[in-house]
Amino acid sequence: MKAFIAGLLDLLFPAICVGCNDRLVEGETLICTVCFNGFPETDSHTLIDNIARNHFVGKASITYGFTLYILRKKSHLEQALFAMKYKNQPKIGYILGQRYGNILDEAPMMESIDAIIAVPLHPKRFKERGYNQSDFFAKGLSDALHIPLYEGCIERTRYTASQTTKNKSERITNLQAAFKVRQPDLLTDKHILLVDDILTTGATLASCTNTLLAAGVGQVSIATIAIVEESVASV
Image (cartoon, rainbow, N blue to C red; front, side):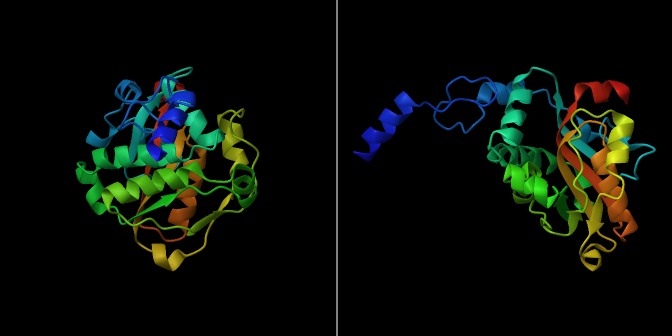
């Protein structure tokens, strides 16, 4: 009976891909295989000087930079990340974290990473959304790489306006003194992999990185799910 009901529900309300809206087949979760194979990956895990790391020159002292995809407007990837961030589908972040973790596990640069930290949301923003998608991405990376995830070590102390409609200089101003390290003794001299969902201007990651380094962190590297295509062109 349970199998019959499950089959009926699948017929009436089929699971669809958050990227292309096609029906998922057995073994697929949230994102179909066709979309996964079509998302444009970068080679940032194979190079020290790459589009992610070079994005922070003059902004923050980043040891390594990693980003999984190039984010293009009106793409299936953009639709999937929109669902992750705004449509209560944070599990997408975990799936992508595991996928990227399996790739990064082959990168020699990862050997020096001591712990992973997700860029935090302000408590008010967290309450509005109900979750931080970067937490899920960080958890996926942590599980795949077997690197500890440090939670609650850094907090967002300023409730900043949305960065979406701001230009580069406005984003930087908006994030000044926006973060505070809560457990500096735990982080002293550690090499932290700081993760966020999407790399646009890098203002958020740069601000968070500078706060961590000022608190005694030894090194900071960054990892994101994607970097927007326009940002790649500006590097």
